[in-house]
Length: 110
Image (cartoon, rainbow, N blue to C red; front, side, top):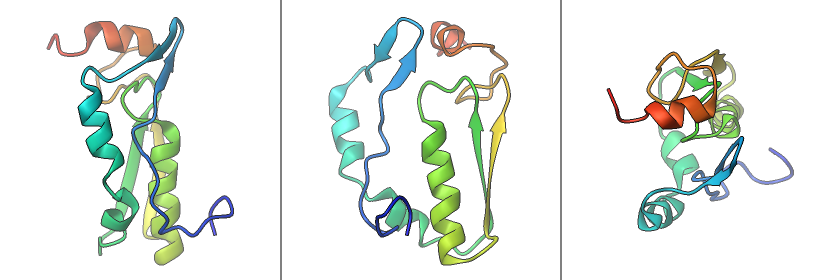
């Protein structure tokens, strides 16, 4: 059991990221609503390979919890099948930035 719930229970992985200036919402709320309808844990549990769940410490798109959760549910299904690792000063696109705010300001500029 993870946090008192069955690991196959559907959860939302489209959490709001917190910045220095407050919450940031997705540009299109409809995308967030579509993602909320997906059962991502069930999809991950279909994998039959080792997984390295990387999260950049300045990622404003996904949360650290999302990546820890992926590793946890896979390791509950198959022990030692997944690892979770934080990449310092890295955002969702693996750009070298030091804050989430900096990542957001540079996001999509190449």
